[in-house]
Length: 102
Image (tube, rainbow, N blue to C red; front, side, top):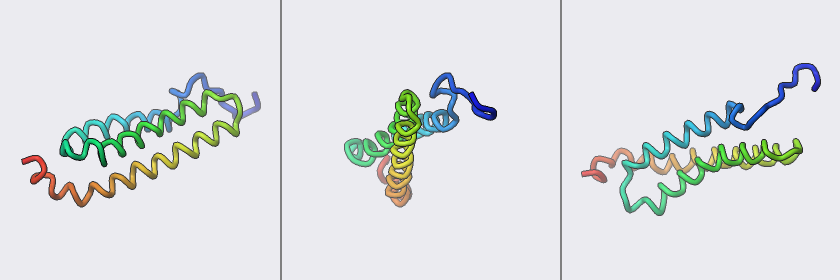
């Protein structure tokens, strides 16, 4: 390998994958408190988007070409944006969360 190039053993070595997994855990914990009627809507959407981030990073790293890896990183980036966007729908609702839960 060339100077300054670090070879990765696994996608688990990638900081982006590690942070993606941490976000997935956080999303699952936080969405447990959401109303049951949102399970099929926002809860499902934000969970799937969050899981897609580390999943695409791992899949991309598993491919042999840089182009395929870059493609999967692009998909992961889109999933990050989707996760954030879905979370923005929930922010105004969180003010009403006491009403939801009680």
